[in-house]
Length: 73
Image (cartoon, rainbow, N blue to C red; front, side, top):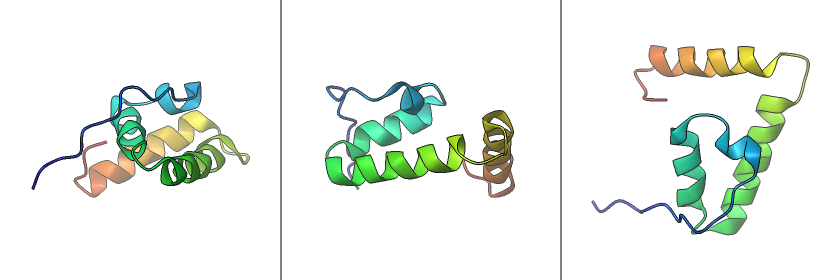
């Protein structure tokens, strides 16, 4: 199955590019469908930046969950 290439012409906000290159590639690939990309970025922003748990701890948790599930993060 052919892979969809990222759209490198899209400019992402800083919070979408300051994490892993995997997330940046994911958002740039979703840029082919801007409505989906924007909604997904808002969801990630709310989950990772909002609330009372520090963003660094959330990031560590995301890494650990991916390890437990044998998923590349």
